[in-house]
Length: 216
Image (cartoon, rainbow, N blue to C red; front, side, top):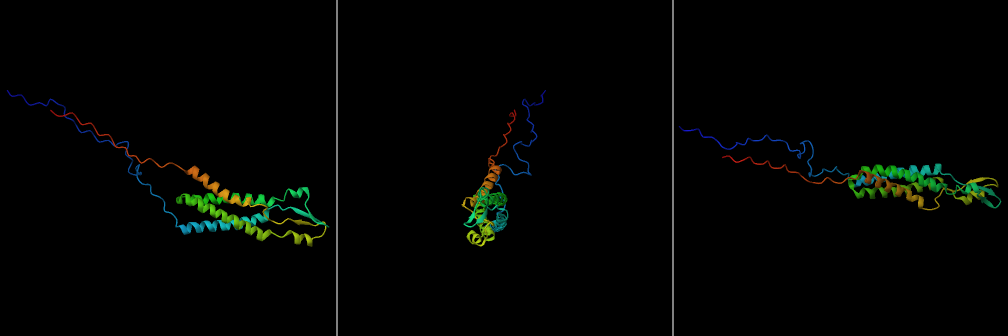
């Protein structure tokens, strides 16, 4: 009597495929894929917009400097004009006003323009800081044009007892640097807070499934 043939080994069954936890969903960009950069503005447009923004800001800041600067008052006498102790403290008022207006303006505009031009990398810092220098020059020029009156002619034309305002001017060029400092500080803060390391371009391969036991 012939016995039926039997298998002595275990027949391996194909395991159902499971999605690997290392694979990214199809809707997301996988690790290691090149990051698509945003389109940059043309150089001419970026520079032109920066120049126009700081040019207009310089005009407005120069007007504000002329309008809100506290000016010392000379008291006219027979020998000319003299400053009292109280008025001596106001002699550097235009310097402080120019510094405050320039710094605040440069911080606000520098931050906005640097964020807008951030795709240019380090060049965006150069564009913003050069624009701030332009704004400082325009602000000083507009203020001097609107509010600088020579002191000597007004003292000669005044009568004893009259009060004559000191001319609007900067006693040093240090306040002009407030524009540059404000713009550079804004760029540095935004760059430091938005910086992040690039993701490591690594891909994890799923481990190969162990082969089943051989058939006998």
